[in-house]
Length: 404
Figure 1 (cartoon, rainbow, N blue to C red):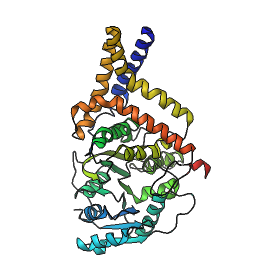
Figure 2 (figure 1 turned 90 degrees about the horizontal axis):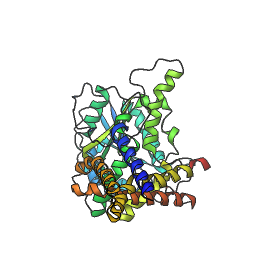
Figure 3 (figure 1 turned 120 degrees about the vertical axis):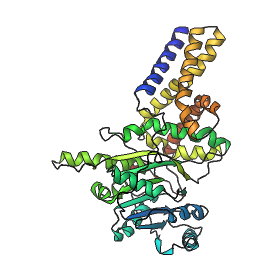
Figure 4 (figure 1 turned 90 degrees about the vertical axis):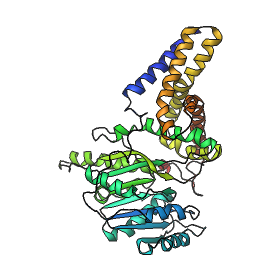
């Protein structure tokens, strides 16, 4: 028994050493939009597209922040009222008048959702079609629950222009105030970075692609090159699907025998310390639903990948603390010390994210328990999908795209 337990611990320890040393330095938080800001070299035309479904409560803060951007170039906001029942459009109009920007806001009344589209992406499609009359150089795709720092758009545009990027995205600062948010939200960011190491995403020679849907600046030419929003119309994880399509587009152009422009397919993803999400997740149930909505989608609805997750997560996150406890109980200090080392490596990896969210350093040691909860959420996501309840959001339930 001791040999088996020690063998599992050494395997877990090896995995953690590999993750820390060779997995794109995912645990670091140095990819930030506000680091190394560059001045604007030009003033491209920008149109923001905001899909909004029953967001009247948040618009006085989120839309106000968007209309009050300090960007000196041409900037218009297209808010698509996705058949709301709470007066979203009226609230949006009131916010625009309150800040003296009624001419800058364009409210689009969304039409019925056609087959084969997710609600959000259909709203985005309608917004882009309306905004196209301004011939924008860039579209800012953002959510109705995001409070933008006044300089967010200026920084995004400067980043895109200075580094010749097709797409620039930031994972906004998620709300982290309640007990459950402090316990689980930093881990959500940590696991996302482990799935999509930002350094790999930002490397044009690495195929890894991802974006964060709360704040995406995409060049109009890039969007047209990939075939528009309709190419990802069924995607539930639409931000990463969009980033993947853009990053692949440069390689596709080259494969066709046409020399791609230097920026084709280049994307950037980082964190933001100033632009933040207003969406509260102040209970275990709300966070659970957020994760379970798309976790199985992230696994491509694959039972094999689900099985691998259910085996791999305990091996990586639960074996170290269990070995420490067992080693102390059995008096086997080799098992106890290797378990402690594995747990400390885990905490070391998680600590930068904990510090970024200004949480107690002791929470870095809670990652095993957090990982266990996320594993259960992933299993529940699969169960919901098999029961026909997967992808539920804003009163809609989206089926597996393969079955459409």
